[in-house]
Image (tube, rainbow, N blue to C red; front, side):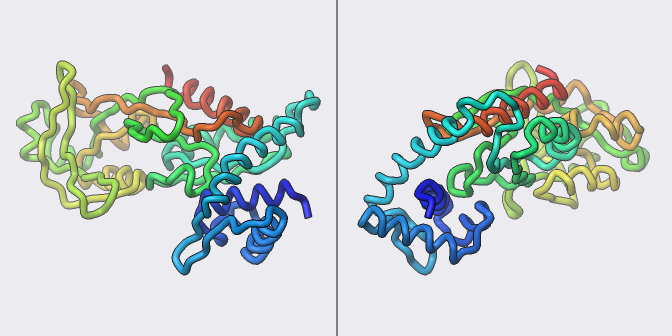
Length: 300
């Protein structure tokens, strides 16, 4: 049995705290994952993982091996392609998460050009508004919008999303076009929250470097960007969203920009990856391509 494969399996189980999830990410049955871990434990002569009914956790010896294994596997990835000159030589799987609207509007239309250059790569692309855990869920890199308080990962700044306030023509015909902040008392807002049940920030705008919030009424609260966009198109109220995502609707007349003097502050777009000495070459190649695509589409 390939010792490197045993280590890869062990590392993924440790990061995801689950045999089942590790198997899904590696494309292996759960039984095979368990066999790999057992074989590695026999090989090194110690218990590496503590199994409970709820989760799998590394033992003290397991943590030591996990840290050593990450560097070793990264080095092996580099060695495998050290003397290969063609771009098609990159092999392996890359797991990435990004906001849904960014995947739909920016990345997926350009992805065929990357895959044509690297036909031996396999991509797993998650697009959700939920903030995934980069390490425990086994992602190689994650695109996030907004401030990044997590100091355990590296954040590469890509660009800033300019924001726009908009509403549907039908909504504006019914409620009127707001021209001053005071007009918002007569309007409705589609509320967006990360977790249903939490409180909406209301209408947010920046003035003279300070952030201001205006509480607003609204009958719809959503926790996904798709629903947020659809609710606005359906005439349920105003939304504040990245101009990049709303541009097609504004150009077609499906949505109308309002209160341009009271836009929300720009949102930072960052590419996150784990702190480690060596990133696999395939991950670095994809991250470089992804950064260029996002920057060329959204501007500096």
